[in-house]
Image (cartoon, rainbow, N blue to C red; front, top):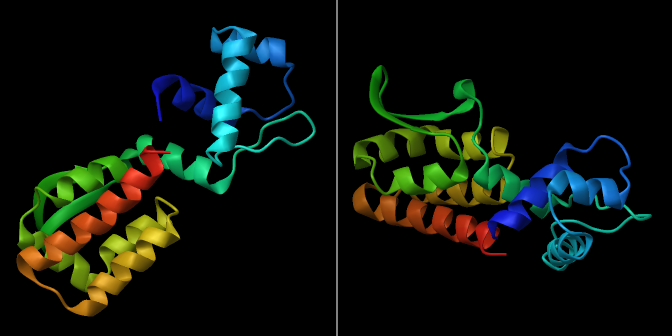
Length: 166
């Protein structure tokens, strides 16, 4: 997804009322043909649909925004090596979570996986049940160490790539 597509998708997500397309284009700082082209691309990607001249976001469009948009400070995923043992790492989006899984100490990954923390955060904060289910499957497999990191990395990389690569 390029910057213009993300900008249009994000703007569409904030609309609370109908908006004339000319006004929408002006607010986007673009031309009508370019804006319409971007909206049509987003429609082909399955991120928006056309309904009576409007373009509401689809579930995948909402997920793309969540992938790239930081959650509030109090909703970040904070990595710990154990109870009362913070690592100093925290993820504020699927993108940073994806990156930090590869950096975090395996002790932290084991701690959180065993407790179901990863799946809980992705389900409740990122609202991504698909990734949460995959992380639950990984937890149930009982993997440890670098094998655990590899599986969590693959699952998050796959989900992140699917969402950003549309």
